[in-house]
Length: 238
Length: 293
Image 1 (cartoon, chains in turn yellow, purple):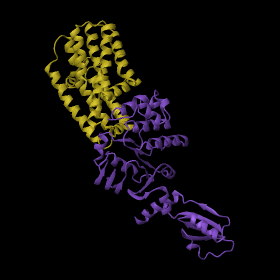
Image 2 (cartoon, each protein chain N blue to C red):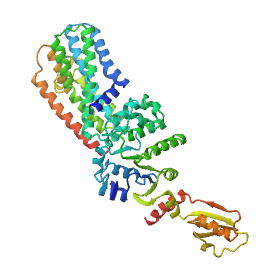
Image 3 (spheres, rainbow over the protein chains, first blue to last red):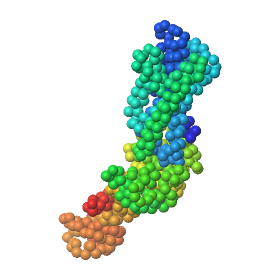
Image 4 (tube, chains in turn cyan, green):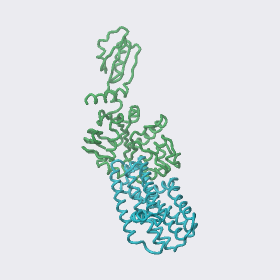
């Protein structure tokens, strides 16, 4: 299975679309958003976590795009006639997602620390990276749910819609304090807002609130069930 | 491998309609049928990709899925396309390592005739090269049985020849090969045994020679030059006699004996002997089923 993980990670990193859209874009957007207009130190840190989160969500969803592509070209079916078990394939895919979110997270954090002068304690850097990494699991599952259910093209569109919609609603691009009141209360229930909250609370020097973990866990269960249902449904056609 | 009364429906369509067959180790078998005859469904049952609705399918005496997990089977499925963003070497060695006793990757590439493409990206190869990469993937694990679903569809003549040369060298190692095709010449040229499938049933099973014979034998034609046709149907091997103008056309199961007998009668004028074509045999066999239906 490690072998499969290595193969799929390699394939993902060779995808120019992934490298540009999933790693370079969040870094550029972060630098752009934080270096235009008035500067208060807090925004550079908050936006860093938000954009690292945005990059992680995009990369996690991208795993689903890979699944849809591999279904379409018959590669998943080909794997079914090798000794690999279906479980190894699906777990290997999920692990691929958890590896490929790392470049985006690390790249944006590096841009924050090296180019934007964000100063945090070592434990904070480590904790933010680790929490964003773990917190991206629900989004990998959401992407896989799309990938196993939809065709290649619709998966791309669905992932893009999920990515942009959740990113904006969850305040990964702009702080939700800019939102009208009703939208702000909606944001509090999005997985992306709670996901970024894991990082921002550490940046503020305290542990994430229980509420954040509770909401994110509910989303983990929801997206996990969605992925399992999609996977079961695809079993007949893969 | 064996099928016993296997039936598979997709909705209202009966794709496989009661197949019984057994294939011994070491055979090279062609599954011949027109498009939609049930070839791919038969293969998906054999590989455990689908379960039969009725009857049983066994591979090495076990359910197909178990034999696949044990690494005894390699397959080249229909409509598989190039896997993007991997090299030939990476792809084939990845698949090889899934099997308990794979062949060296270099050997698999050599058998598939793509040794020089090892470092190339699979998604940047031509159609024929991609097809041979998929063949290398099927044999990389050194499985005892290899199943090829329409392996030469969409290949040009040259690529086709190269492909069959690769397949034969693999079969010569003593492996069992089952391939499906709708090309009669391919089945005839490359298989020891041909299974003709039509409307989900096996309608004929034998060597190409046997199938041709069952369709009415070879044609022996000669000029009568005024001779009477009486007694021609009694000559050795002759099954039927047809006269067109001054020319007699005999269908013979044993054209050699027929010709010798004709020579004995001093009747050889403008002699023509032509083997029955497999086309004739195929049309005759599948037509019978249509009438019965």
